[in-house]
Length: 110
Image (cartoon, rainbow, N blue to C red; front, side, top):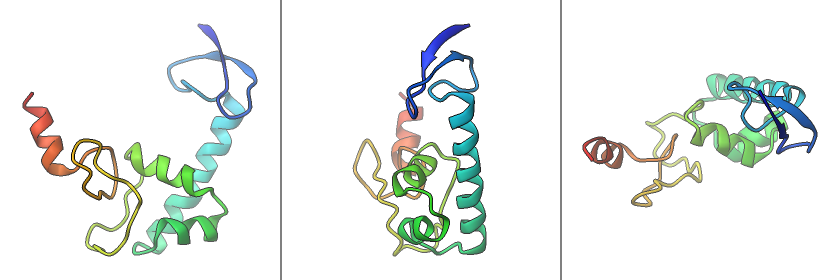
């Protein structure tokens, strides 16, 4: 195991595979925030990121991070919802992850 500095609080901690960038305390807080946001979207599937942030108290950038890493997804049938996420390859608006479906398929063939 190696020593790392937490990107959230700056404390040193023993790095392992489960917590690449956060110390155990910050990781626990992040997971609680994730649970709050996930529960909010389950109850309010057509809500925006802004609405989720206001209702849960979780920072908008953290919600966008959860969406980008693919752990959260807003309702895909709600075409008017802007998550703020764009495909990293073509720039098309997406609901979750890093790439739109078309680019994901194209990249899988490279």
